[in-house]
Length: 120
Image (cartoon, rainbow, N blue to C red; front, side, top):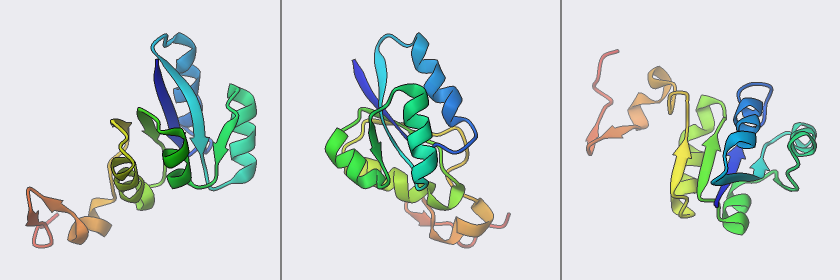
């Protein structure tokens, strides 16, 4: 059984991801993390998740999920993705772009080549 986590439980896709676990036999949504304590608590109650964290790094360290749903605003996605990798998370599902390319292109590298000279 895969131990799954979600980072970001705002009023968007997080509930659809969590609801899908009713149909998944090989994985369980075991923990969640969010900045908003109220949203996090409501999400946990709605989906029967007791392991709730305000700090996703703490969640990764304690829970050791196999898979993480990354459901955050663009300005934090890269940071969470790096933290997941550092914690040994095997897989991350992220539907949206990793970052707002226009804002963050100067800090992103593709195949080791800085992209700060790319025209968009």
